Image (cartoon, rainbow, N blue to C red; front, top):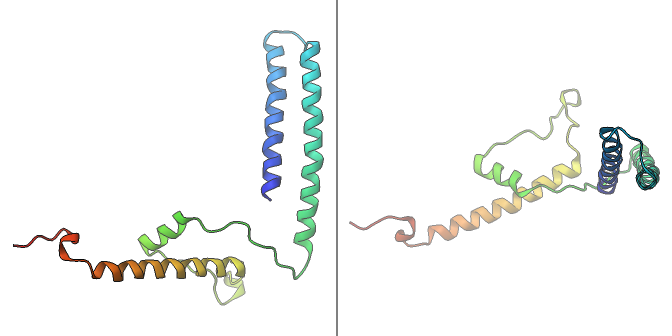
Length: 146
């Protein structure tokens, strides 16, 4: 998936370069000169080869999606920002419900497992920090005697 995205970005860059060549010639009210035409043809050849490679990745993705009973590995991990938001706000959301007609299969089980593992780790870290802070003398909390 990541490779496919990178290929699409490269193709977009090539298309932008081809567009700039044509726009430059149009603005000057002329056709492409020999060097520009050669550069345009090279860019188009590169774009065509990227199209073919993208098509191969899409075909592979389609095959993997169509295979029944086979789980795909999750490629994205939770970001620290998402976990930090959960810890700070305490916001919780239901990952799934018990009835399929009410969205019971909306979360991939592997993702659910990964989220829960991350939350357990963050909870352990927070509890360890709290235990440590309870043992600190009062002046660390900004409390003054008197």
